[in-house]
Structure formats: structure tokens, C-alpha cells
Length: 113
Image (cartoon, rainbow, N blue to C red; front, side, top):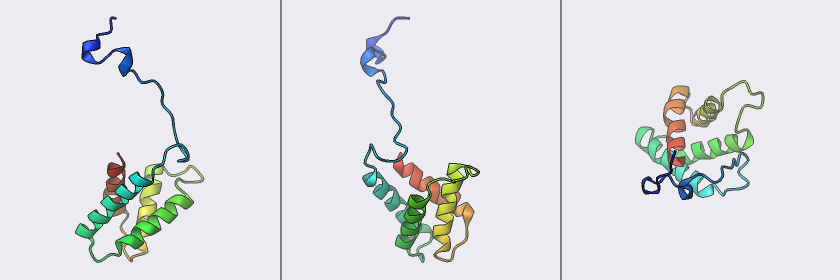
């Protein structure tokens, strides 16, 4: 098969490397995290304005930093993080895993992409 450089399939467009920064030591992600948390804050202000949004963010961040995934590898990472959001909501008196799973987790992840 011949490479057609007019279509962007030449060697200069090939992926040269892929790296995984599983412990956040190679890439600074603070700016992306701030943007994601701002997106969640804005979402909460529209849907649950009575909540202290900063407490929810702080509680999530503390839980996420402490245990970003299930130490026993029994719970899928996506569900684990939804549970961290749910615990953050519970700190404000709201027990709604579905809201955490469908809205907060999605909102944060979409902002990170």
C-alpha cells in the first residue's frame, strides 16, 4: 500500500509515541482539574443551587486523592469515582448515586477531555 501524503497519511502524521501517566507525575494536570471542577460547580449551580458547591468539590478532591480507585479491585474505576461524588453530595445532605453517576462524573470527565 502506498502512502498518500496529500491525505495526511504520510510518516509525519504517524503516532510516534504513547505514554501513560497513571500517577500524574509526568504531566501537570492542575489546570485541567480546575477547569473540570469549574464545570461541575457551574452544573451544580444550575441544578442544585442550595448546595455548597465548594464543599462538594473539596470533598470529592479529598476522596479522589486519598483513594482514586478501589484498592481491592472489586469496583470498576468509573463506578468508584461516581461513589466518591456521591459521598461528596452526602456531605451536603443529598444521597443520590444516580445524579452523581450520570451528571457529576460525566460533567467532570467531559471537561477533562
